[in-house]
Image (cartoon, rainbow over all chains, first blue to last red; front, side, top):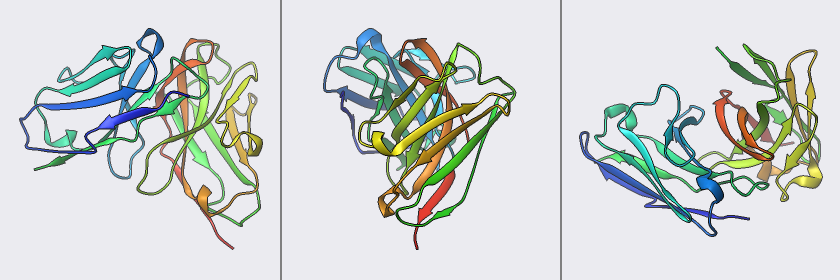
Length: 109
Length: 123
């Protein structure tokens, strides 16, 4: 089973700042089969990125994903007020089991 | 516009079976392009994959739950069902159904999610 470790646990930033979120896998994620989701309080997760770097339909271009192997990054170039949320990574290169990271909370500083 | 709606009892007694249904509208669960999955989230915690089913009936389950989990399709009603047996307080969570875009066999990511339903386990 591939374990995904997200860091930091919490990121305190101001609107307009750049956010860099990390997702590290315990083993190489084949074919960069890694996705990122955003979850706001009381809502279901929303797909942001798949295939490590492809934006999902309707996702703003301030969101970008990168990485391969065991190290992946989600970058939000300039935080908008609606971007403060929890972000999860998920690998699907070695499934089952499909696994999620523990999440990174991006909060307003 | 694809929509997924979970339904089922919000309260289940310990040792009984949790049964949820996901009704899909705006798309067919019989498509070979997608899987259909269940994910849960205990209050204040992270996401846990429960299991996934393909239109052919093939299922994949989280091994930590496997012996208790059953997922099925009702194509006539365009519904996906989850049964989780022998529940305990640890099964209290928001349960989400989601559509998964198939990349290859057992490789997929979730592109549409239902709003989720909270299930509490208590006598």
